[in-house]
Length: 189
Image 1 (cartoon, one colour):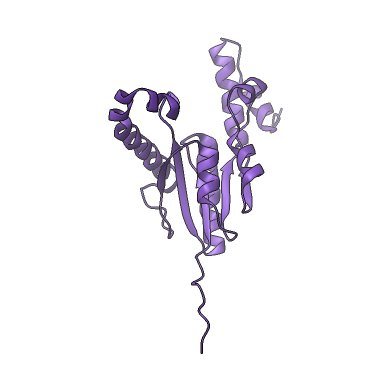
Image 2 (cartoon, rainbow, N blue to C red):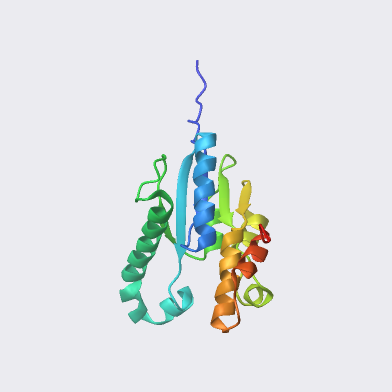
């Protein structure tokens, strides 16, 4: 008499994708993790109606544009895949998903196996941004039942954001500012 054994589910690397530079870095890292672990790659873009689900429920006219919002979310996910992989395919087993809901809860709900790895970008956030918008990475770190890998923002992205702020404020900018931001210093001076 043989015992019934449940089939072993394939290991998955679930990665939150929004199209931001931080999420693109997380997607690239998640692909590397999936390759090294022999796991499936599950890029996930979570979306909510622009005014939130409560507003969509209160105003029935908003329900008629929900398919359009979902289509736009799918296009944003495809754009992220193209930016990282050069096409819509990741070259790995798994499936890209568009899911309705707040990013933190959606990612935690989808990465629900002990064998999963949840990868998220830990974007650099200032005090004001932290106060106004909830942190997806903090939510996931506090509530996920699987390991969570947070990918820090690229130093180049930080340097470019700093240069952009200086440019927007019409402040003087020279290459030394970018080099200092990257920690390179001046060479040959």
